[in-house]
Amino acid sequence: IAENMNQVNQYFLQTLKTFDVEKVMLVDHNTSVALLSTNKKDENTNFGDPGLVNAKEAMTKMYNNHHYAATPIMGLNTQLGVLIIQVD
Image 1: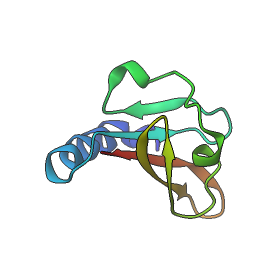
Image 2: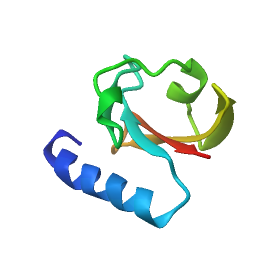
Image 3: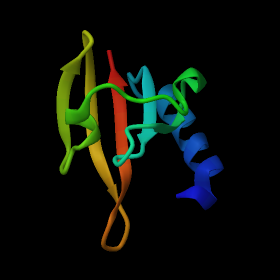
Image 4: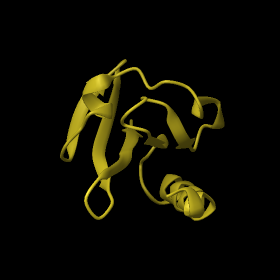
């Protein structure tokens, strides 16, 4: 993922324009730190809901009065992170 952060960021920004999405984040599932976010203030901060950060399959959840969807991002045989999308 590290080599493609610019491309991932461009995709996140396109997602904001295309869908009813408020925020898109890529979170490190080991540390809960947002590696990339459409809201730059969130980058390098901890995402507070461990249920979303530890998602092992696609899921939705209410957190802090917002709707979130989360899904793990997988490499060949390890989890690379989790994609968390805020939809309001």
